[in-house]
Length: 73
Image 1 (cartoon, rainbow, N blue to C red):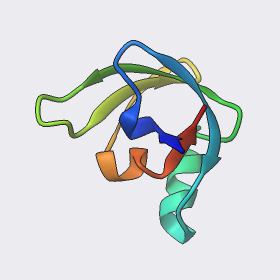
Image 2: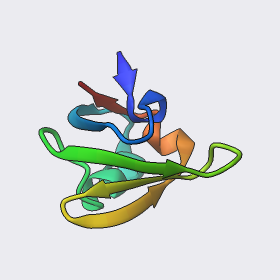
Image 3: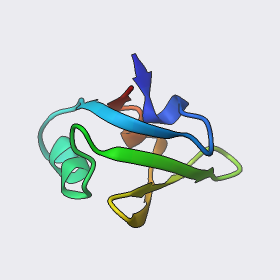
Image 4: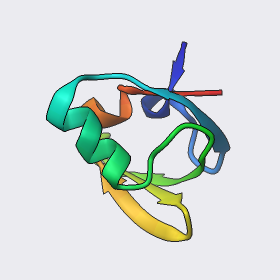
């Protein structure tokens, strides 16, 4: 299983599944990170947290812990 956290900078991937439960999963999905959505990894902070991505035409920074819950293909 590949996750968004493991995706290299400059790659575009498609979300396969959002793992997690309850409010955390709902928050990720509310940000536009839903199944079938393409995500471009723009950059990663020096210590690896957060990760900046482009999703649905806007830039978004997400924590490593949240990126780990997003399965990509």
